[in-house]
Image 1 (spheres, rainbow, N blue to C red):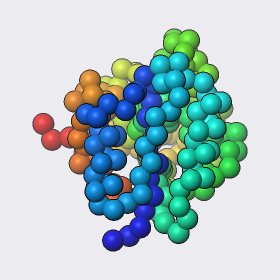
Image 2 (image 1 turned 135 degrees about the vertical axis):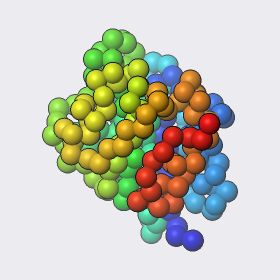
Image 3 (image 1 turned 90 degrees about the horizontal axis):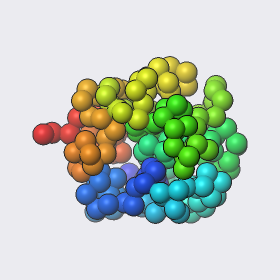
Image 4 (image 1 turned 30 degrees about the vertical axis):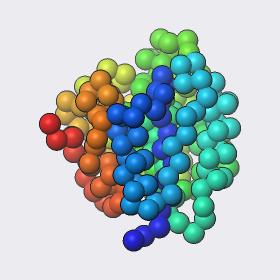
Length: 194
């Protein structure tokens, strides 16, 4: 088995519920013998971007060397990652990055708790092989993730029909396709089986 290290980053108001696909993914990857870090970021209901950036840096520095390093970010943590890139945070030299369900700037600007997470200026030179996956009906990105992020950032983007924000509300407890991608970065994303 190839040795890999995974850093899984949750979004706004996520208290890492056990039924969420990120928790499910962390458990599956750990069972397979991979090094997995799935931290509870501070104050998820009222996050501070600078605090989250410091936590991101700390957790990246803690990933063991000599292994493939993979970051999986959902929702507001997609914006956390983009801000880290824009600010030149150290330790972003990972092998692969998966950005899942990013909210759009206008949506974030509508919530005082996450205004600071609104997207930084593009273009950005993203590290590692970056991929974006989102629903075609994500209420947090009504403009469409391809138009808002995929095309402007020039990254491969997969839009899945009818999966909303890829969260528990949309039924995303388990998600076999994301596990498959973790094990093989060329895997195509699909909706979770009904």
